[in-house]
Length: 265
Image (tube, helix red, strand yellow):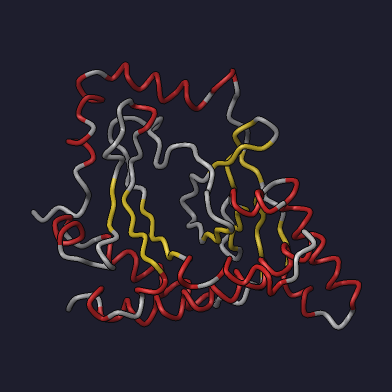
């Protein structure tokens, strides 16, 4: 049988030998006595308002983006310009990619050798991530050598998807830059393709414990992250010193304000 999953169970074998280590993971989820909150609905913003001929409506939409960025650091957007068909194509290609044999993903140079899995540098259970991913620089997406013979259709979909996401990122970055008192042109490097990545992430079911992290708690170090969340859920964020689970919305994309944008502020 050809195995597509990375050897996470073997890699984190200490968990099997000593299940009490999972207590550390559970404690990490409740630092300082924090209790995980109910599923929440992020601020939902219809970007169609930005195109309204009514200046007041377009300004209110921009203010809603800035307000959600300041109060939450996260928000969801509707009418974002990425078609449902393109999102479905990207998801279909992503499933095909992750279904490839592990050895092929890890050793055959797919997507600029950007495959990664687990947390090789982890020294304790709270640092373990039960996941696999491709993090490919946007500047490499068009290179034929990244795909091999089996993933020819992936290239065109990724090119279209990256271009659409880039347009959305530039739109949002311009609004946020203007709110911070910067000219849009002065922050063009934020969305320059040489600084951007297209990240494909997968979080396999963990057979050890539901307390296992798919990705350890962190902040995004970049300027802006736009996420297409599937309907499985699992995304959590900290709001008012509480962990909350983000309710999936099939029609929306999630926007996360990164550390670098906060530094500009």
